[in-house]
Image (cartoon, rainbow, N blue to C red):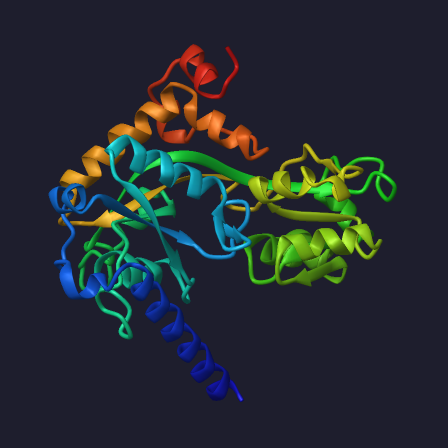
Length: 318
């Protein structure tokens, strides 16, 4: 059964790839495999890699791309003076696979179907310089750069079920929804000696967990802050609130999100980095987030050298 499911998934992926290649104007027949900065400008478009069906970051509404990463991709392309083209990424087993399939090598079903730049990549120096058992850099084919947002974990709760959420310990006695196989899932099922495990309810998407909260099946939902903000902005979730608690022992409470390019495309990287740097420092990145009803935090990368006034300006607090 698993083999059949895998075959069907590969067939579907091949159909998606073929459809996108046709929509791109048969670009495989007339473009070089290596789209350098100059070739991108000459071609008149930038292919921005974003994850499919991943609200509020990148998704579709009636066939039209939506989300904060879509808006950022459009702004970057506009600054470069080229057209924005979306490159939908179907997530693989891990980030390394996604980078290989979409940034530097290509999927074995479509070797030349590559994005010029990939968004929503964790900006993590430890990950960037990971080595294998022989001392070779695992990610030497890509450059991780241009952090544009700091993400964090967040809980939303139903005030009819809970007066407040001062600590996650309340979920020893109250059901909470999480997306399956995510860090919140692992955290809530293992923290405090596993005392919350029986109260954890699993869903395929954060939106499904919110639906369960509307139906009274769970008292709260945990996910990434932008995902929670996106759901809280919907009229049907207007009665729910964002909690203010922390997550002791979670490992990584906050992390920076940036971009990735092929390691040979440094000139493109410098151009993109300059654009994103300006968007962050001027507060335009905050405005993009606010337009999507999302809170914005300046990446930790900038907190190492910007003063408090500059950080406040970048976060829209003039």
